[in-house]
Image (cartoon, rainbow, N blue to C red; front, side):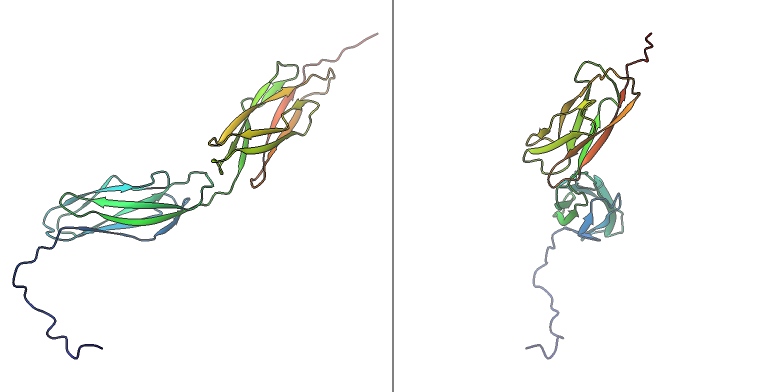
Length: 231
């Protein structure tokens, strides 16, 4: 059913109506990738009521580690809106898509919110580094320390298989475990002296774990032996 005429839809209220002052907040896009940068999307805040004065609007993000906004924006006098950028934060963690709420508030106005999803672009990855790029054979063991890091599944422990491409020169533990709640763990590299003049050796250390991209690092092992002549 519908009205045959809409001419009678306008009338005058018997008493004055008080329309509350309020803000409205809209986003250019409600879904942004975490690597989208400083202007991942634009947001617009709108006010009603008297426009004769400028209005300071306070802005906040529920997840500053996922998306950030300026601390405030000012709607100029005579204007009803102002636009500001929403920046995506690349956290290098494979933590899945994250919801974020953007809030706009101003004195005397009902605040407004807008909801945003920041999509994850990271994949589970191990990284491996050492505190020394070069070690001397015959040095006191551990001759160097390796740092193993993960970017995902921090809530549970992770067992990582570690190997050396030349275990006769540099040895590592067969496995190391990154504890639950931790993103990294350290372990020692043991260098061995073979009493041969064989020059500097490059030894690759490899780390692998189920569900993660593997990692490796090369360590230079300096020879401490010198040629000896005998008669």
